[in-house]
Image (cartoon, rainbow, N blue to C red):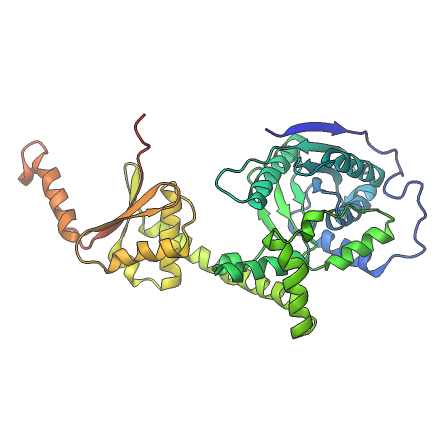
Length: 393
């Protein structure tokens, strides 16, 4: 369970990020750009009144905190009231992580953010890699902190470089459109706070420059260059190699690809959602889709509809291979399956003949016999999704 450590008190009026620091003679262009990006993100989110900066102490999130603090000191964005808090998540995965978190809190307090707190989590993700487990624990802690602070938005410091790395990793894994679309600039969280990534148009070098302008000393996570992690190898080896061999601008092109694919993925998801809602039939703990209507769909929509059915039945996002296996049931003669999908969902095909036999049996068992219940002949078979029963204890 995450533990909460509230830290500090609000800064005095007029004090904040550069309290006691030399003030730059003029605004650096990158700072102005960053402020505009955050301003646009907050406007797009409907001007939340209180936002929470997720800060690790690294250059990206510390630069974001400094830019958010500018609006926090002003007390508004475009005339709409704004307060800015922060949370530092201590994953306890490295020696001295508590000291790093405490130093980050001091920097955030000096920036004038309030409240600032530390959330300590235990990373123990069974069945997932260390990066995914840490991400899951971190997001749970951020959502809890946002709920406690009454924040309507959580600010995340991902940059254009992070987006490019995400696309490359998706390509390497053979992922689909949604994965290649990368990280969204804004998406709903699990609670009441929206997740905002205002810096997806900035390079990592830009955030380092912002920290230098603000005279901040960021922490550099050694795991970011650890070749044991695929993302780190992508960051320090693959992307620089592509820039060297293909010329500058590769990261920007990858990020632009993600932005284009986000539009495509959103449209396809919307079509699949409405299609699924029009086709799904529910029966007790399971659900089904008519095979004739499924076959008539374009493959891009058909696979998405099958994936939505699996999720609706209580399962997880199937891999492409599992989706292919489920979709192949539509080309079988007679009843077929089951195909096991992740999350404990079985999918199988019931043929027209078997559906009619089931209806005949149900009618025969009704009071007055089969002839007392008019039967509408089934027009086609069905693809049925059912959660697997838990093993008997």
